[in-house]
Image (cartoon, rainbow, N blue to C red; front, side):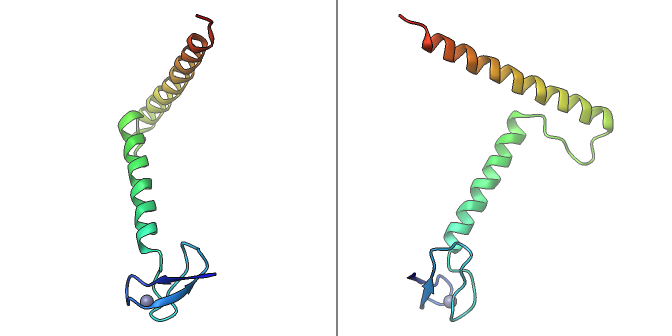
Length: 94
Ligand SMILES: [Zn+2]
C-alpha cells in the first residue's frame, strides 16, 4: 500500500503499486505516465516488426500472405543460423 499523486486532479490517493489503479477522488487512472510509456513501447515494438519483417496486412491476397510468411520463416531461420555462428565464433578458443 502506498500513496500516489493523481495526474488528473493533483490529489493524493491510495495506491497498490498497480498500473491499473484508479484515483479515489476523480476515478481516473493513477499511472497515466506508466500506461502511456507502455503503449509507446508497444507501438515501437510493432513499428520495428513492420520494418524488419514482412508485415502481413488484412488486405493482402492469399498468395502475398504465403510469400510473406515464407519470407518471415526464412528470416527467422537465417537469424538463428547467424546467432549460432556468432556463438560458435565466440565459443572457439583463441
Ligand atoms: Zn484524481
